[in-house]
Length: 130
Picture (tube, rainbow, N blue to C red):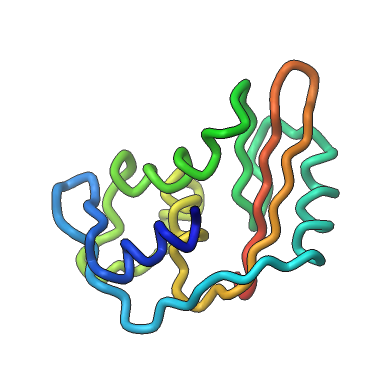
């Protein structure tokens, strides 16, 4: 699902909140699954932290199937990252960072896990290079 979304972005078919299409990617790589990243993601997910996890996409919700969709749609909900698509320091504390981690063209590895925490599911994905 993540590679499909990245390919849509690479073709310039992703719309930002302001209605402008993001530019096509010149160097988008396919993600390969990485078991070491999964182990690191699992260790973070087992902490059951309801707040964000530095350097990871984390989603804490009742339905475990929504995480990828929630991370990706932030590009349509949050402040646009500009025509040049530079990710700036001001974006670090915003929800659009989840989209950026998924969309980062140089990333070529992904590792994810889902952990049950009380009555909710904690989904965590790590990407490399980040």
